[in-house]
Amino acid sequence: MKIFLDSANVTEVKEAASWGILSGVTTNPTLAAKEGRDFKTNIKDISALVDGPVSAEVIATARDEMVSEAHELVRISDNVVIKIPVCLEGLAATKTLKEEGIHVNMTLVFSVNQAILAARAGAAFVSPFLGRLDDIGTDGLERLSEMVETFRNYDFSTEIIAASIRSPEHVVQAAQIGANIATVPFKVIEQMVKHPLTDLGMERFLADWAALQAQLVADGVNDMETAPKA
Image 1 (cartoon, rainbow, N blue to C red):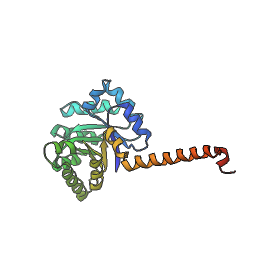
Image 2 (cartoon, rainbow, N blue to C red; image 1 turned 90 degrees about the vertical axis):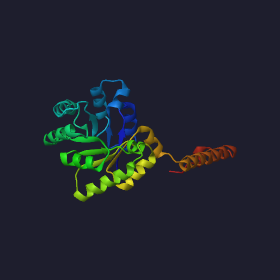
Image 3 (tube, one colour; image 1 turned 60 degrees about the vertical axis):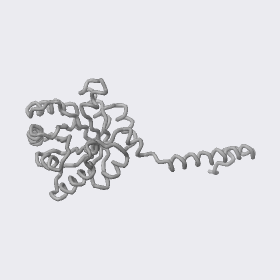
Image 4 (tube, rainbow, N blue to C red; image 1 turned 120 degrees about the vertical axis):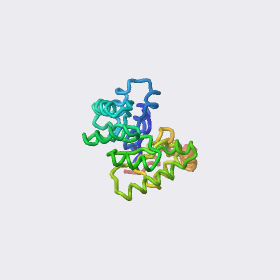
């Protein structure tokens, strides 16, 4: 499963990219608004930091305006993907953009029906929102599982992005279900790498090493004397 960072913060993107685990980035108007920067400049800076797709969402709600806005956004960088909400106007815009060779990430997907329609319209990605489904008492992971199974039945080329990830366990379960991608907030990626036994092991290793150095000093042995001979 590929890992995308769900963030519009350039510092977070740069740091996560340095770990060698990023396959792409997703943004949305809410995340972009938090940065207080010109949206296009921000997307350009993010796109320069990653090799994979960077999703930039349109604000327009009518198909022609969505397409026009998409044309402006793809000029920012070759790896920009257009994020469009699933709705009738969005499906029409996605069909047009697909025909033009522009990749679309259809977002705010909450049902299998929506995912099927997005794939049929030509979306390169669909983004089911797991956490938001959980918030209304619906099992987001169950919906994700149904989408993965459905797409396998018909061999859709559209990739499924597990979005609205709330915890490392969400990532594990999305991977086990078979989602192609998980787009994960920076904080959750940090949590994914941590484990109390890893921390304890590192503490013990460092303590043992410090004890050895102290013993060597007490015995009058320095590092040069204990270093392997060439």
